[in-house]
Image (cartoon, rainbow, N blue to C red; front, side, top):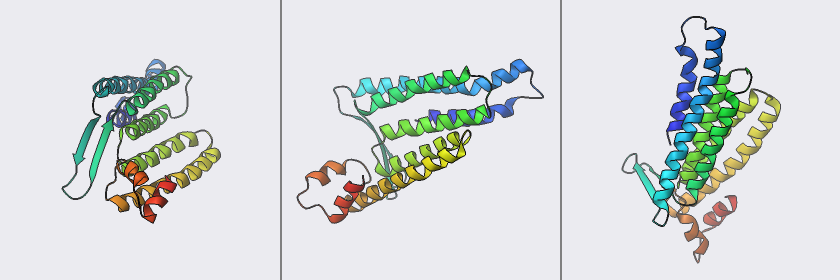
Length: 212
């Protein structure tokens, strides 16, 4: 899960690795390098998702639990036959997009574009594998910020419109998650079926479900 974010950091540092004024051939290699890193990271992410998918087929979901502190917050990821194919799809699209951009003519700030694309891809993959509503909301916000920054490099006005509209929807999603959390005391997606079949769910639970 951390691979796209680590690759994005490497992409940002890559322009600072050159010494002196590069030749035209070196400049072209530096331009293509970040996108090739992105293609490699996407391919490795797809291999990981395929491995997790084979482990979850016919068995219980593959769950990773993280306890930051004993009483502060419980963070979990869950891979099942439904979420792993989404990560495989995202990784496959990431390989295609990065290889396509690597073959394009010289563009403005290619390293910045590649880092934003890698971060957004990592957030999308983590959303698919997360069983935690609060974490999903946070990753969606971060992915949106990266896509807005990427779109702003070409056309700021449509990007600002997309940012404001989507942030409103994600704010409603976060509000619904917080209300459900207050209802059942658990920030994962597991309480959703319980709220749907409960005989007398609280008003906050219904409001949270409507917002989601």
